[in-house]
Image 1 (cartoon, rainbow, N blue to C red):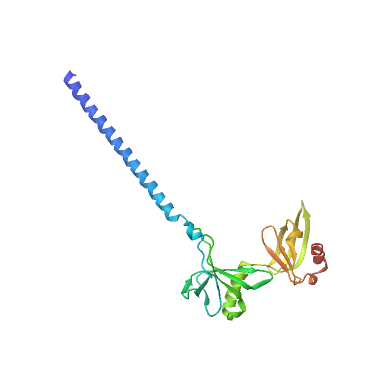
Image 2: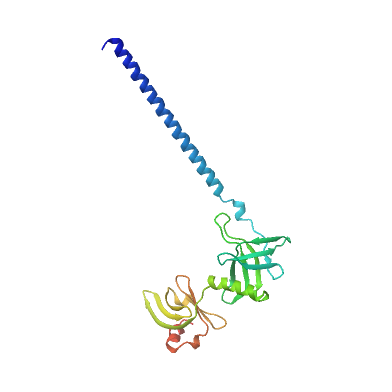
Length: 231
């Protein structure tokens, strides 16, 4: 191969190398641009999901809920909806509300807190209002709200204690209840078993489940002996 031919081949190869380098650089720039756009998109999404601190501390004025300013109804999925006239005299509608008892044991149908559901964005739901006495509402509303409360505050009644043993500081009980036969564990019976003012016995196990004995003296002799030392 002559010197001129070698020079020509060398120039062609050099041109190819430059084109390859240029192509590589362009590809790198495209990747950088794509990565930057992806990061910006993620940041935008994070900004959209970001919780506004002002919303966390913004609370509405709770009002007394009565049949004259509050109307409850069943919504899709077995939830409870509410139409209410607020403190400003404006009508508001809530697709879903949550109802909680202030005194679940001593006054289960009084001072019911009606709230907006908790959400990640707004945090704890604000209280819309308070039902001072559920009995003032019509029977359909009472039945609707009681059905919701029964699910939230499921408290089976103990009919008979079939077994009770202690092991490593824990009490293992078995009992026949209004919801069937159950087994549960108490980590501190003297603290977990409470005698209420009206004579009923409330038992809370270590998983947070509650059981009720309406009349401890109506239990059979063996069952009464199990709880007698704790009351």
